[in-house]
Image (spheres, helix red, strand yellow):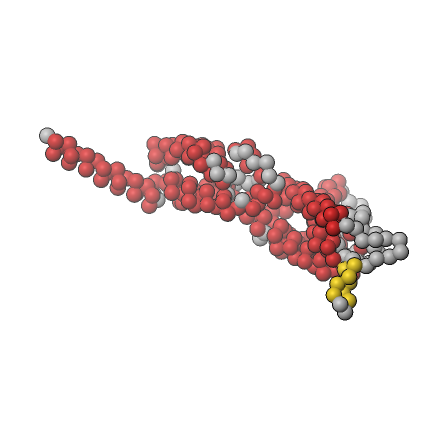
Length: 295
């Protein structure tokens, strides 16, 4: 079980002076569940539990040492998130006790309860630590693909598989975004809206889905590579609301695939392309009829 001793809590949060972990038990349970549900997914969380009890062989190779160090670092990040999250949730209630007339605050001869302002300041500082540690964990996972098979079941991993841009670092190359990874993850609905409501109607969901699948599988075709850069600029800027700029990049993509549809069979064979051709034929017929009537 991750974070199963008070020593692990105090290693992350030195302001804890207790030697009793039990007052944090309920908050630790919630924090572990939250980490598994929102960040790691079940499979990667199970791997972390395995890493927790793993030991190096008696005479490890350099490769084994490196892998063990990498696993240990990942585990440390995960346990730090749990500790910070549990502490953040526990802070308002640590010194509260129930009495027959309601709640009271514990006090000793040498210590008085901290002011509400100082408690809130501590809470906000702890919340910041939660966010920073999550960012470190996500960045580590983004850069170490050997954990991706276990990570695939998590909501956080969906950011790597549902969209045209795999990491927040890459996203910043295409659009102005100064937020954290957590804030970037919260943009996921806007990202999906950008793809399904803005991009798909212009290049077809068939071509869009093909590119997404090829990005996941790492086998992007040369023709799709040729439009990916402009597609990413369009996607990123639609996501943050720079619609005019995004549209300019999307027009570039549309021009390429319309000029040579045979290079993009997913688009050429789509209902969207059939509709475009049908509308073009109809407009030509209408134009010719008007021209003849004018004669």
